[in-house]
Image (cartoon, rainbow, N blue to C red; front, side, top):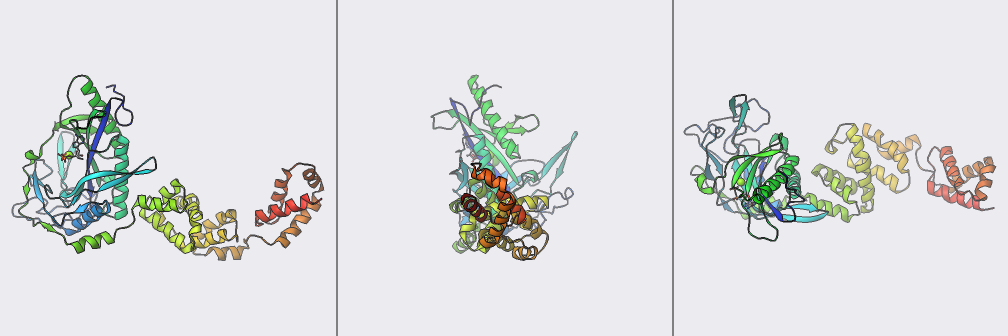
Length: 487
Ligand code: ADP
Ligand code: MG
């Protein structure tokens, strides 16, 4: 295969991508029964008559899943259906004992909406078709010639986020996945851990001649479980389709499986059409009805989303990198906002960002702690920042104080007082030090006055040494310039 793919196609062909992302919702028990949800439990220990689809077992919907799906839908600007319902989607697979999956078909819980991504720093909204609720299947584990079925995952609540076919490159698709993962984590609707299969992506890919509006025939890539593979699998598929079409053949509607080890996709089966699934409303489950009040109470409890936070922080004067880092996780943003609130003045916004991003995160990494577990609370960090801002201590001295604050419950000002670290800003006191130094170093004084301006640095260094680094550099510089230039 040799077709070259540059940013989603080539000069002649444009790629069209739509993603179906399954998000495992953070409910404690399964969607339609009371079995616990837990990763890594011993196989088939988390089952019950409903999960096993034993005759007579009836599903009862766990409404926590509905609340989480609505929270996600509202955050993404979807319209919430006040009336939606579950349907049976029939297909046979050993890891699905009922012979059908409970999903939503013609009446999903959410419609429309978008996932925001950043394209070279500019926000772009990727349109969604819908978000619907469904239950997960179990897992087939292939061990040598045998296949073992583990039903621990069967019945877990999922929501499927379906995008419109509007993504144009593998990179956009990966950015979309990253943004979606960040949002589900912010909202606490899912842990979003791809390695644990809590976020799984099927990518639908087609190509068409550039400038064409109609969609080409797509293939669907299953089994993509990392950001890297999203990128690789889609690029590979675009190149494969270009080769197929340019060699005079046609792309067939099919499901392909991404083989991450081999770096290729393989045809798995012809793609089912909706008709093959024989959808019909599940007679065991009542329709889902939600009131305006419920929708509004979920909407009003939404947190600020990562890209909005990023823009707000940049509005405070932070660099794009700092703003992105501080809005990358909810706990990070909360820490930053709390620090700034305690610092008591938004003009400390950049100072707080620098200290958290450049210093505190480094210290926490050394201690192997996340920002949420920081032994230094926002209020005490703000105390340190205030001392820097009002010139009580230099940044350099503050760097020495920070680790001490992480190891104790002490306030910055107590450490400064106890260790006598306050900056010397008193001109009179510094003048005496400067005079003594000039008297001791007549040669250098002469050199400076003879035109060697670099000797200023020598004197500044000497004053710093004499004062244990506590002299305020600005005052020292002014004094030295005045005295050395005087004769
Ligand atoms: P299913 O795959 O379950 O049969 P849909 O027909 O709703 O369901 O399509 C699912 C996904 O495929 C959506 O994300 C949609 O944007 C995408 N899609 C549909 N047609 C194309 C196409 N021609 N090229 C690329 N993506 C497509
Ligand atoms: Mg599909």
